[in-house]
Length: 113
Ligand code: SF4
Image (tube, rainbow, N blue to C red):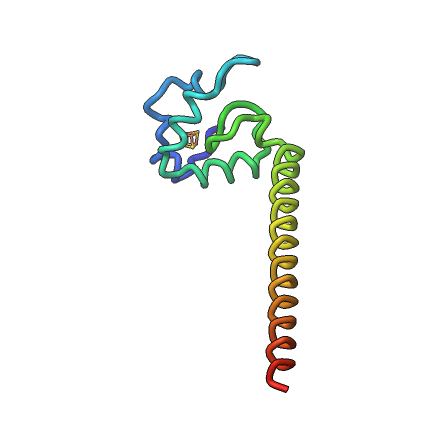
């Protein structure tokens, strides 16, 4: 049974051969991703595929492997680690800067005496 989903009316893939979006195992999904990149309903499409746990094909510009929960978790973990490192660097820089200011203030106060 086919369910009508309103956003599919605006899907760019409607104008292309569906086989582009369902490459053979080991085949390239580059062409499909290129088309998806310019699709106005990419987000809706990706959400739809994730909700329905679509196992095959390119949806919303992501291959089946990229949509797997483990792949998404890894990508989120990487981002989180990068964010922590960046925050740690900023914090260290702030501490150093505060220490310098404090030393300068002490020197300046000592001179005045
Ligand atoms: S994002 Fe989804 S709807 Fe849009 S072209 Fe790609 S597969 Fe089709």
